[in-house]
Amino acid sequence: MQILEIIERSQATSKPLPLTWVFTYKFDKQGFLQKFKARICVRGDLQPLSEKETYAATLAGRSFRMLMALAARWDLEIRQLDAVNAFPNSKLDEEVYIELPDGFKISGKVGRLLRALYGLRRSPLLWQKLLSSALKELGLQAGQEEPCLFLNNHLIVFFFVDDICYMYRACDQAIADDFRDNLATRFKIRDLGELRWFLGIRVARDRSQRRLWLCQDSYIESIAARFNLISDGAPATPMGMQPLVPNEDMADHAVTHLYQRKVGSILYAAIITRPDIARTAARLSNFLTNPSPDHMAAANRCIQYLYGSRHLAILFDGRHTEEKAFKVYTDASFADDQQDRKSSQGYLFTLFGGPIAWKSGKQSTVTTSSTEAELLALLTAAKEAMAAIRLFRDARLQLNEELTIWCDN
Image (cartoon, rainbow, N blue to C red):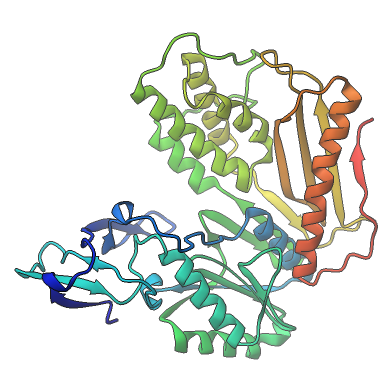
């Protein structure tokens, strides 16, 4: 791929960055070993900071769930592609020098990078720009609210780094095939067929009933095994009734790191497919810097609850018949935090009967009445609902209904 050119060390105008070998085992969805993979990466953590932009957007979980709701509603085909060795497709726009990797060193020589290797700060952004420009050249328009969403009159394309999916009506099969073939002329692409897995999320469908499920059972099994928390007697709720209070002692570094890993694993499930643990995840996140044994036990309980209910899934029913397609619910609990007297709030959005967005957490300001706490929760939900409507507009979804927010008082 002509990723680098070998030059004399004296020609390098900046300190060459070291490379590192990354070795991984690649398994299929059933857990069988597929291949041994070796990849050379740049030590980007040692790369000097520059004024050039490094932020690369990724597909939001809310956007993915909204698209799955559309697929269920109109029985759309969903196909998945994988860009092989994606980042090095992008040409570098800055001078970067590297040490030659172990096993390939040449005395007095270094490398000058010509393409974006994995590990560089700007590699994800350069790949996103390259893929976005390719999609625009193929006649698709980018969404304003979601930069990883592109569409035209026949196709909806979304991507998360090198995982690319496209949705279309069955009658547009020929157009979809042309799109795939044209993309394959620009990048090395693997056709993975119908979408069944996306970022560790199982996508199951009953096409005859227009039903689609999103489930993270495999991910939950892996984190329960990683922390040795697999057990038959799973708790019935993700959190106990006893309130969690700050740790009066000081936790050591190893315990803190383990707790942070557990809460991080819980958060991914809470954000993607499990709104039932959103409140628990928010509470556990309050003690990341100094967890107590009680906090560790609460995190263990949540993971065990997840394992016991790992087959629960988000359902999008394409035959949803209620009058309103988009529903917004909000609630607050006044001054329920005993430490700082702040209130809790939460919201839930559903599209065609399935949840697409939710959040539970502590309010940022102290409210002086239950009414004020409810109003603040209502305001937060309203702002997020407006953003969701802009996202619908990106996907050309016109609901032709007034926004209504349900609040309990």
